[in-house]
Length: 383
Image 1 (cartoon, one colour):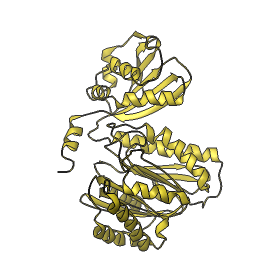
Image 2: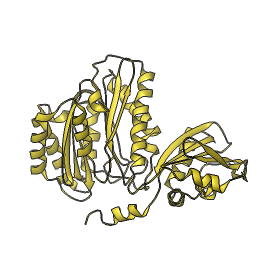
Image 3: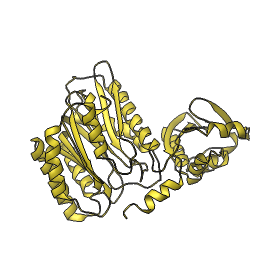
Image 4: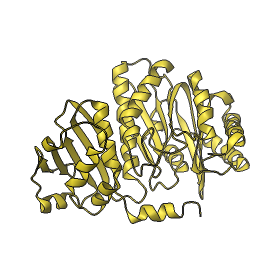
């Protein structure tokens, strides 16, 4: 197993029929969630913000193909009905069912289809590699690959699946994520741990700078492994979320390269994160990465508009492919070997490390290059 079904107490299955998919995940335990900060939250997000306050989930149902966003009172009612359908299918209370939707905005859910899919999927719930693969594929929209992560420790595991490819921006990155652990973690503790993990991972992914209406990450702790040291669990959860976040960046719409930016020497961690996110968000940086053009000026310029104070005349900047690196700027002086730098940009990963020499803060953000394919995908998204 490579993700959620590697966690004791979790079963799953999914179905994908054309653009429309449905995933069911059955797992009971303490639960927490983080959600989009977009003002135009989908009704399903408003429902889950209320429901997650109980701190417990018994199942999750997620559909793809229709975001059920900007659908008003009917959309809220439909989200509740979708939860009720899933609850009936797996035999749990409707109030303990997590709900998520992804797809086209401004369309209503096809509840008869969801009912049909739910009742076909529920009898197939199981713990297997096929089960988690089917669940991960069911929630995909423009994603090219399913996304899994499993982190094992000596006494417990953390696993997750996610989807995300376009409309990706921080707070949160546009995505659905369903994370499970067999560790016993009280809901009040899980809330803060998940929030911190999301801040350092999902909230540092940028594909195109557009924030979704439907972002959601849910974490359920089945507790079958018993209590574990909280710090160890926090590190494992963050590792799992980071692996999922990087997979989202790698699978950005039209992407050919993963872009990783680490900022050091900032006044603090959040200042470093702000600069790193600004750089990975820059269309000029992203297109330079696509063209394997080591344009150090675009990186420094993006950092300079991030709103964080530093002296551009004393910074250091390196660029590489994750294995080797070359300096581009040292102490504010240009030292770039253009031919060598360009050769390091020809692969599937481009890494920039920027030292602001203004403190001890450090953070990493992830994104991807910007290609013609992105325009092609989004120019015809609904038609």
